[in-house]
Image (cartoon, rainbow, N blue to C red):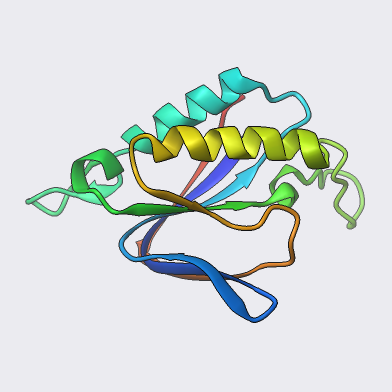
Length: 145
């Protein structure tokens, strides 16, 4: 499981010209599910996202987590994070978990995050337009493997 974590001032997801979810201050997540991922990967990733210390403390040092500062999470499914690019110039998505099975783990991930921090999803499988105001910029790539 790969997740791109971005500290965000504002983020939104639009489908068919309509904003379907948005957040103010918090985390914007791009979530890619691998064919080998299980609930164990989901649990590891939830713990890592919730406890990742990428928010400034009173001294301006990144020392606080989303649990410390509050805010919200916008979580977007992104199968292209599983792209294989070692051979040729056209990415292969053979390592991305397919459709319904991936959606089950994506929803599990969001539900477990939502127990701690209000988490808003994108629309799984839809063509989405993502607007991110990345603070810092701060972008961290997490991989459960």
